[in-house]
Image 1: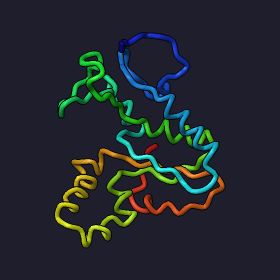
Image 2 (image 1 turned 180 degrees about the vertical axis):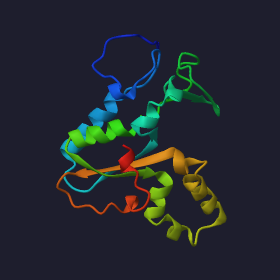
Image 3 (image 1 turned 30 degrees about the vertical axis):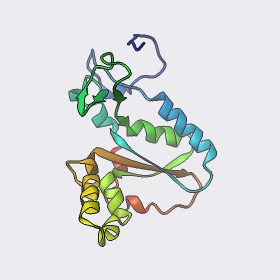
Length: 179
């Protein structure tokens, strides 16, 4: 079964986050380990990750004292993974600052960090949509709209330290300075 358990761990949120007592948060050791493994194997090209999440300052914001864990089942959301175990999708937001630091520690350079909308627009999605049908444009709108997936989802890019890569997707609207 699934259960919460308090236990000691080497992983912890950054001290400068100034978390209030009783704050619940998630840690992402598997994501950081994956980035380290990728950095050892990727010698050319780049890696891009698209997910919902925040830079550290927003991730540990006092309003988020209950963490970001969410469960989804039948178009309904809740925060209790112990109800209807096995019948729900369980998810948590990404701490993109932690992912960026894991990449840098592993030898990657961060190409950029931006919203999904900025990334897709920088990559030329508007030109691709010029001849698209109404249905295709409606689907693209969901990917680009600020109140839909355009702002909720973020993109971070990595490349090996000595690789030459044109970071086209981050030309405008790069938010790396917020990481």
